[in-house]
Amino acid sequence: MNRFDTHEVFNQAPPFGDVNLFRCDPALREGLEREGAGWAADTLDALGQRLGSSEVLDLARLANEFPPRLVNFDRSGQRIDELEFHPSWHRLMGMLIENGAHSLPWEAPDGQMQPGAQVARAAAYLMFGQVENGSQCPVTMTYASVPALRQNPAIAARWLPKILSRDYDPRSLPVEQKRGALVGMGMTEKQGGTDVRANTTRAAPLDPARAKARFGEEGEGAFVIVGHKWFFSAPQCDAHLVLAQTDSEGSAGLSCFLVPRFLPDGSRNAIRVQRLKNKLGNRSNASSEVEFCDAIGWMIGREGRGIPTILEMGSHTRLDCVTGTAGIMRAALCHALHHARGRSAFGRPLAEQPLMQNVLADLALESEAATAFALRLARCYDRQDDPVEVLLGRLLTPAGKYWLCKRGPAFGAEAMEVMGGNGYVEDGPLARLYREFPVNSIWEGSGNVMCLDVLRAFGKSPEARAALAQELGLAAGIDARYDAWCARLLEELAGGTNPAATSEFGARRLAERLVVGVQGGLLLRHAPVFVSDAFVASRIAREVGGAFGRLPDGADAPAILARALEISSTR
Image (cartoon, helix red, strand yellow):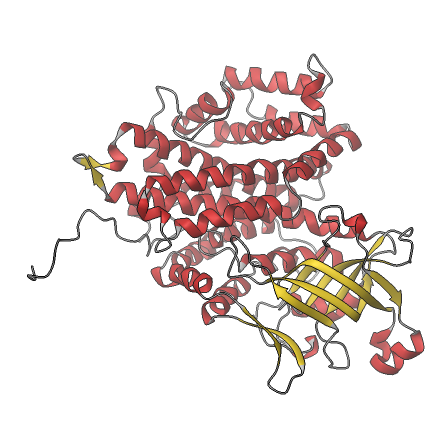
């Protein structure tokens, strides 16, 4: 030892990396096959190897250490409102796009979705969620925009070939000159937030003669938009879907508009980026405040039906909130468990100490249940030809977004605590992952909005209870505790002995129970007994709540942890 060295560094777990994120995750592999996308296993295996490399994992650090910068004016003083990103951002975006994270379910030339395409995409998205989350935002919005854009055939013909391209093209150019395009969203305003009906942004038809003179045939149906958006996601995207009123009183209702960055004549649209948001997390991604100063847009869907148009987009973005949260959970678990296996305290590895095993196994159960739920929910989107699957998706999308996203921050905090001070500092990934959790709960409808949406789903479709009963019933007869729990839930949904269970006041509890019930059924049917029994004992047989690490006696924590991260099979 050098005479100026004060100590030797030892008992430090190496950084987590050079791990195949697909092979080390049995729950993901099994769920992919079970939910109808086993055909994608080889592609996802190769992707998991690439995403789990130390080099790619470090791109996330760089993209967040060097966040985007807004450049409002060029050197000659002309307004440009451009974003400058670190090269790591563009590499991450390139990987997402080239793997079809924005397009896979929509790529079939005949418009018929390949069976299992939503599940395959969800599995890839879940692995991307273990790497970097800011870059997922514009990809999610682009993916979710496709069903909305198809409501306007002329716009779809012009834009979808670029949107569905797997060639990432970050250049600021008119869409015709680009190899690929991205779409963002601009919904909320200062005075309304979630209550988009309070929006004051106005859209008025552009004089047809002026529109044709300026834009030719592409000017048909153009509107002039004046107003603002308080959250305008990813302003570097090539176009945004925007809500605006089409009459001065707002009596016609909100309409939805496609507002491109560049107009058909090659000029920049009058979208003024005021500033970028200074956010808690998701720092690699640009979120902004903007004003529309006679910006030009084209209506998507029917006048006054902007909210239903956006809701179709919103259901897909909410699916990604569920899947993305499952991915962040998985990342936090992997880093925590890897650390606990590589660090000793009081004479033995952390991962072999009973109380730490309880904490880690509890986290592993939560992560596996989240993965199983996300892939099952994705299958609902694959089976839009099945009314039962449509109803189930209508229920489980808001319920899942509520419950998984609510569990996320507590999960991240517990994983951070496993690593102690090493987890709390910015040198490692846990602090960043912890900051990423809350946005999925807030974006695309807060927890209360999701729970009210669950109640609306039951209210609008009496068949929704039957769809849920059918799903829960698939696990009947395996565990008496689960059977009794499901019977109580379904009785309450039928208006039984506890009316408060389906009231607005109790809507959060109801949404939680829907998700936990579906998760329990999936694990009972498909996971090893040591996983399903511990899940039922800790979340069905008794109330969910409190900190992680409350598994009852008898839970086989070593077996759960051995399954949770199969490093030996990943290289």
